[in-house]
Structures are given as C-alpha cells and as structure tokens.
Length: 182
Image (cartoon, rainbow, N blue to C red; front, side):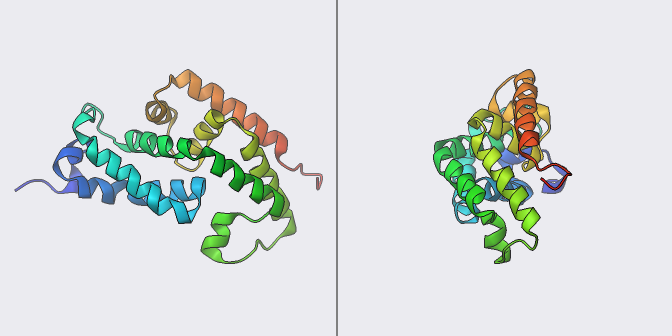
C-alpha cells in the first residue's frame, strides 16, 4: 500500500497523484489569483493553471520537492497575459476606494473613510508599478512565497527579486498615508 499523499512530496504527487497536488495547493493559489485578478476570473485561472501543470507534468523538475514555485510561475504567465485588465482593476479601485475583491466577498463598502482613502492610494500605487515589480511584490505579499520561491516561479535571480521588491515597496510606502492624518 502506498503512503498517504500528506506524507509525500509535491515532486512525487506531480506524476503519481495529481489530484492530491491540487488539493494541497489549490486554496492558496486561488486566494492569490483572486487578489490579483478578482474572484470572477480566479476560478478560470486556477483551472487553467492546473490544466497546464497537468499537461506539462512530465517536464516537472523532480529534484524540487515543492511545486508551489512551479504552479505560481504558471499562474504568473497567465496573469501576465491579462496585465492590462489588472491595471484597469487597480485604477478603478483607486478611483472608487472600493476593493473589488472585498466587495465581491463581503458585498459591502469599507466601514471607514480613512480605510477607503488608504486603499485607493494603495491601488493607485499598485497600478503605477511596472508589471515585473508588481508581480514580485504580490507573490511575496499575497502568494506568501519566499524570495527563493519567487525567483524559481519567475525564473529570475534572487538578486533581481530583491531589487524589484525593494523598488516596489519604496513606491508603495511613498503612496501610503502618513500618521499626520494625510
């Protein structure tokens, strides 16, 4: 009898039990995609991500026990194809001050005007970031990937991850309201 999926690495699951790989990572990946693309598109992007992963499972580098960077890399490629829509979403958020993901889930407007203003500034700052900088920032912040995992997902050196993240954080900090009631 084979060992349970919970005790197996992602590398083993890619070829042996792809459904268990989906069960292990789908919720976190869906949450990340919903933050990036909205809940309406997240389901489709998640399905496309796992379809592509399934089709390419034979090419997976089995020396990597964690498939998250690989899956986030596939999802990132799908997101890159629709980055113009993402910028429009952040621009709408900046104009209205209403987070479309929170509005979809909660069905209500933010309670505090200050929170709306801050959210609008954040969204405007996200929309203004260059796509590579925004992608690294959101993989760290919303995808909860480590620097090495982001580097693997995007197939870039870790130094590039650090510099993009530093640049993105500086721009986001510059857009954040100050404690003086700005």
